[in-house]
Image: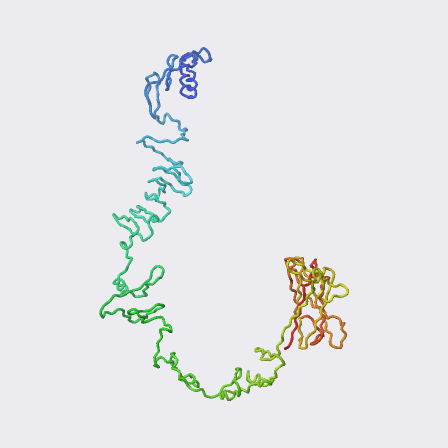
Length: 571
């Protein structure tokens, strides 16, 4: 095998292959202006060969290098580099290309007139267009791709992206509303209605094809209706006819006639006028009826009767006559009972009401019985002393009871010196204190926690006192939670009795502190126990904080501002 190759020929071949396969080597050799040509495989014994000046393909001949000046090839393969001016161009066919080679990463185009054929089989498609999620930003007319978001083939046509199928060549979105002509079961000439102006759509037919456009008012359809058209519609109408615009606003229909022509004739039917009026010569002849439109004459045609509704008859100008059930004015006969009625008269009621019974006589200034009122139900009843209150639900009279309220201040302050407003016991007494604010100074009684403190007051009951007493304690605290158990106990002492009795069982109220410090609290007790108390007696009142009670959980001092006592008087 070694005899078949000469070392010089091998060295030339290696140099040529190196120049063709590694362009970086060209640059390196060119920069040195000469190349080392080896004469054998051992890597020694080579000769220095100068490089020719210029750019191109190098040809090695007899240990010299020169530029190839032969045939130039475009999109073809250069073969037979046997001489400086030799060589041929050969078109690349399938026999020159390995089937496993794929060209990627570059934009490729074919020469004009070159036809490409892709042959699919039962497993693979012959051609795949490629997919993307949105339209590319730099489309060129003729570009195509598959949109994986809308699942549509997209084509760039007429300067815009459009669905390749269903777009009809208009460049419009196939998701809109379209007017489509149909020929041989295939939709054609699709026009996107969204591209038209607002209004009616006109279809121009030519060669069985509809070309849609926006209709022109007054040209393609009527915007006004003539009187003749209205009359023709009225003559042909068999049901209700309503004339109005889109906002239900009414129109005025004017019939221009002359001479003795009939303007309007109503056969068997009804004219329903909800508002407005019918006018002749500018004057209303029929309107929605109002009092100002009414005009009456002295005729009885429309008077009320026993067989129909109607107008009231003309008044007879006689106060003794009344309209009776027959429609006439007559003087009432017979008598009536005043039971249940209230009658006012100045002297003898019977003479003023000759046809009335159960009237009685008026009260004299010193009379104590009722003679006029609810008939026999009040006749002869004795009036209670004082102001009388009538209860219509029970038909009874009673004395009017007046509630009276008395305020007891808990304490007072002389500058910063506190003094009690209540009577204080010798032990476990509430402590007087001053509540000094920015604007106000007020005396209070402090009821400390866990001390069971008390204070007392007294009140002379009037001679017209009744049997009900209420109490309201006004207090405050620096705490914002917890409750105080207040007790109010009473006992009364009459004339010639020892003024040191035991108190009645106390009435109790539990009142919670406000959520804000030092806010006033009202603790009310309705119906305080007053056993043994009567009008004209002296009532002792004891206020007590029951801090030992389990419901008294205010862990702070309760400051009593005062107490309001309400009792009743029968005036």
